[in-house]
Length: 256
Image (cartoon, rainbow, N blue to C red; front, side, top):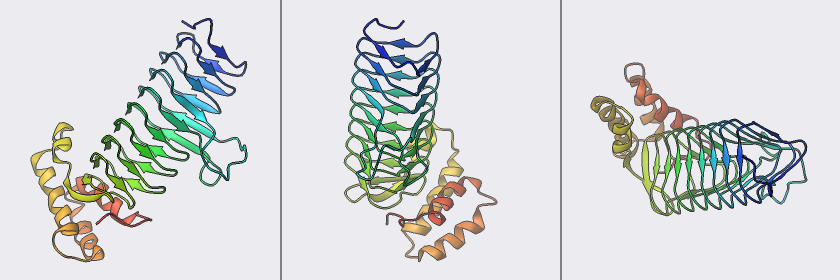
């Protein structure tokens, strides 16, 4: 059902069963897929594509101009996948030409109230961002990452898959996959063992990840030495590959 007070631009493409609440505004070049529900007083500007079965709560601002002073009305995009929940007062900006021109939110993410996802962020699937979590521009977030309330990441940081950012943690360096962090700046405290158990990792796989973590953070080794030892283990312990990739593909350096 589309409420009679909703405003929809002529160029918007909206699936037949989409629900639009009172006083919501759907701008030009917006696409909304089947089964998506948009509550009252939501503003969605384009170019933005939103997949199927999403739920967007009241007062969210989706796909508006990036908060970048260099932005000059270039036609950049926001892409949102399927099955996401976006709660009240969230802001998700489009990309900029300084990067790929796209901000992307994957599938089945749980985005709680007052979260800000800045321009050019790339977020995977099945993440949780608790209230007031904040991502600066160009941040990459892997699958299954959890941001606790009021946590955040500095621009260009990478947060590896299955990582956990504790409440108020602020990343100013890359956080490797599986790692739990707290503090400001965010400091590694171990691996996200409980999360890995919930996602079906075996006790042996978790033990292997812990051992790799110790090589980097507990053995006093240089990073290059730890990377060499972990590389030798990956063929027999493939669960270490995301952790190793986080170490070798870091641009800002990893949190230590």
